Length: 274
Length: 284
View 1 (cartoon, helix red, strand yellow):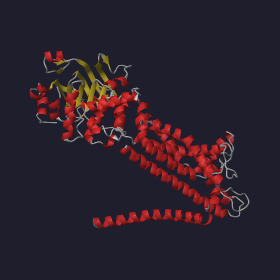
View 2 (cartoon, rainbow over the protein chains, first blue to last red):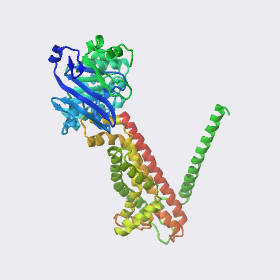
View 3 (cartoon, each protein chain N blue to C red):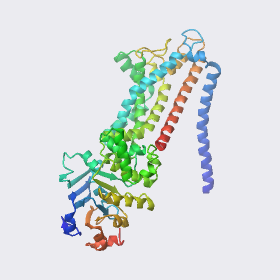
View 4 (cartoon, chains in turn red, purple):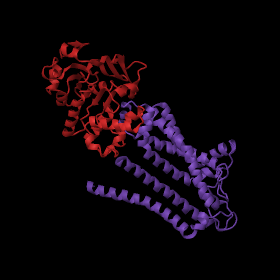
């Protein structure tokens, strides 16, 4: 099947069974004069893990940062095209970005807990959303930490600084912090690139578990990681330095990794370039 | 010359030059303290009333004036400086023309000689606004003088807060102001406080800016900020240059030692506070 110029290799039956509430339509992203992404079309299936893979500089992170409009923070950036979230274009004029970011959580490449206590880190999102009652916050903190598989390790040090945790714990804390605002979608930008293999394994297990309740989009450099945990994969590439990034192929991960349509995809996943 | 030898020579040169700096400082401090402590500094001097014509006067009203004027200055300057710093660091692009103009103004202000601030303060606060020689006129002048120092150090502290904190906050649905208030300022706080306290050290020692604005001599402890005060630094100048007290040498020595001790204390507290907050940030 083809969706607006991108081949989707998962067959009609599967795609139709899946609910998609997030769709990218003819999206191009610019930083001043530089075109970073061109004509991206994509449907993100609900409650599945979608991975963006591709060589460095192909615009994976830029695309990911469109979903919660984090690119707004980059001076000189602008977009053409749309991303529809439940039928509304998130780039439309009156769209509430704050509300969008509550529904679309994000975990960054390097663990970035605030220099506050473990508790304050997780409670930050709910607090700024206006929740003040301590009992409610306590409950949210506990639930979020449990979902992020961190509760047992930190329940005795909730009120010590988050900066004292190990890198892997800090990254799970960041996941807990994102979960605390009850998002529907979680964006992860190479969340394991700063972690050792054991910590990586724990995060991967966690993501697979979280995919039962959340829609997850992950950017990864690690193709094995994409193959291990994602249900869908988008392969992105730039032709030459200075060209915009494009989606070369999108489909079910098992297809992309065993039987890709596109020769470039095949060359990339077999490690012949990039 | 072989590299090893060059390295050794460089080490010796840097060591001896830094020792020269240290020695110059030590000579000044030891001289001021020894003269002051041996001859002048006793409880009667520190807690006594000053005399206009006789020997044996104290400096308590001057010490109080200094502390009073310092607090007033910080109350005036800190909010304005902090707001300026937040604006420069968070609301403008570093390279924009407006930012460059503001920064140029601030840097120029920071490098002006303090007597210029003194004359400016006299013409604006003392004469034009009619506040007379008063603590508040002195504090306003000192506020203008310390504003650029506090603003620039606060701006640097705010800029040094990693962007990853801001991103994390925005990604949780925080507005810009919430992010600044809840994440950026708490992280920048130790640096902001250190910069402010170092500026306070300069305020306490400043004399040229207060001579024409706050006053030189008072007999009683000033309580009303609209009345004349006499900061210690201004009084030292006055005692040396103008006063008709026979023991002016000892008043000057004692005053200098007392001023030095106060400034050293302030710097000591600044260091302690900064390291306390740094520890706390990590230890929670």
